[in-house]
Length: 126
Image 1 (cartoon, rainbow, N blue to C red):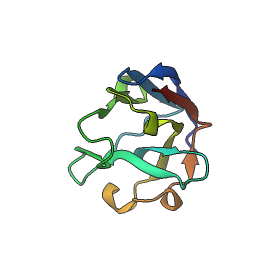
Image 2: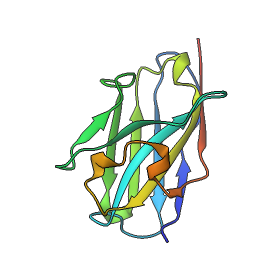
Image 3: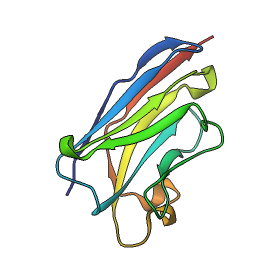
């Protein structure tokens, strides 16, 4: 079972940037589908970034053009670069993984993922 540990959250002002990291306990490339989710108080956990059939990034419309998902396979680490942050980006951010049985875009919702990190808080003030 893969273990995931997020880091990099914090408090920033609107327009600021943060980079989240998700360190995996094993090499996930090709074996797991990975994604970033977030959950604000009183809201459902939503996917903000994942990958398509070709392994290319896909983003929720709310973060498109501002967030970038990437990975360093040598370090078993997934990243989420977040630029031009807005107060509505305030949430707990989670890294998630699921064994790759189907193509990654199939795993759209939090219910599809069974490995989660502990989360890292991102707070954006106006």
